Length: 219
DNA sequence: GACCAGGCACATC
DNA sequence: GATGTGCATGGT
Image 1 (cartoon, protein in one colour):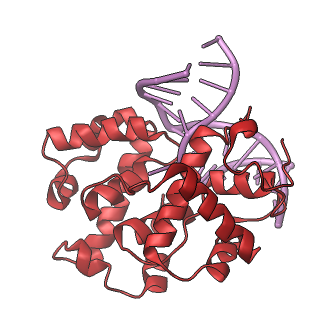
Image 2 (cartoon, rainbow, N blue to C red; image 1 turned 90 degrees about the horizontal axis):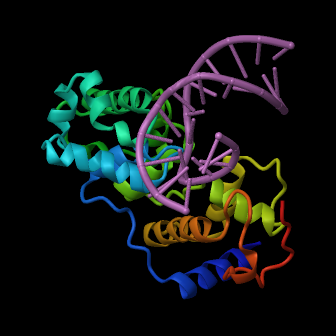
């Protein structure tokens, strides 16, 4: 397993090149994006973030002071907007509680496991969102797993279909050195692969850069 | 019109 | 503990 995960990374990087993630300019923008992208494509998230930028609302205090209903309306294009407005408020409340000065960089100075527990305790933040925030906003060496990771690993027969999030994460983290740049790029490459090849149905495996990694099990 | 997208919480059995 | 359902927009 160790060797194949490295080989897959190389194959993806050779094929796609660096992905330049996360597509966000500040830690705050990454936090917002991490919530908004839940079960939603990035184009819609981008529109929602654009709305916030246009109205100069992409600051901690502006978001914190904005009524939830108004926030929901701004992020409408990202879908699930009422739910996500609540989730954003929950996350901002955690940071405010931990860091009254609203300094996100200082918030991230805590130990990774402590931060992860605090994030997971926020209603609306599950493992993928927590880990995305830790890796991409906090620059902690935490491997992010998502549905594409699951599809890639199951379709190549590398894990069983019952494997859960934590087990997949352990696979990568037991194999690869804790390296923020590597984890960043690897996850981004898997998403890129997923967008282009590992569609839910109709996977275009013929042209997939991983086609040589057999066995290949099509669902 | 159906299906899909960088999840998560909660109800029910 | 497993399985199902609500949340919702915009592109293909």
